[in-house]
Image (cartoon, rainbow, N blue to C red; front, side, top):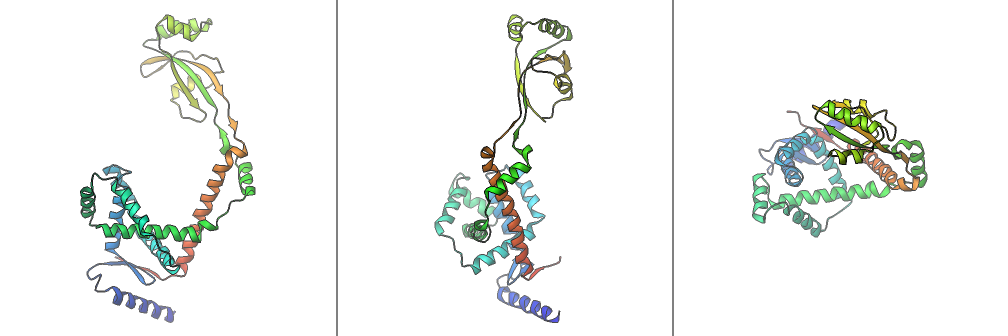
Length: 304
């Protein structure tokens, strides 16, 4: 225990000596092995994500997205630091053209280079900051690909077993196709309903009385308004609902056709199954790998 305490003190001293002048006045929020994370790093990451996500969300949604990230942000930065340290050990480097291409992609979200530079300045960044963050993203992707992604395999037997154990996932839902008429009052709806019950077709009735036929399809399990559900749920194909009221109007539904549920074949489903199993293994592998990195690392979070 004493040796561990001494080691921690030595590491802290080395970090503070190595980074003291450069981070003078900047609050250290965490130490990860021989690297530190400062308050400025946290702020810079938030600003970087704001620049990255600008094209995907409007201003209000963007800020909500940023706020939702802040809760676990420090843990995210610690994990990023661990992954980047592994990339350094593996001597991974990123080709400059890839960083430039990403910058050019982000630049397309702005009206001009001037607007782009103004946005960076507003968020306390310069182009070099953005290039550095993008380089780190690529480094993390590269090391994760090498350490986890490239080691994942999905065998045909795994795909078959998943298909056999989860048949409900590969069934297309039953779809019920309806025609319906709309009326302003119950008397009109009842008169038309009686004609339809006598066997006159809905198309001829609609043409004769200048009615518009509306069409709708309802998938199995789809949530319906209570009035519609009560009127149509027990109809057989070709069946007709009695007139019912909804939103101050009256409706008559006719069930035209039922497209039955179909179980997709294994060959039709294997691509999606393989992707699902691969993604699951990827997530599990990433979590396990990061946990192992954390166990063999010195991590200290400063208390406020």
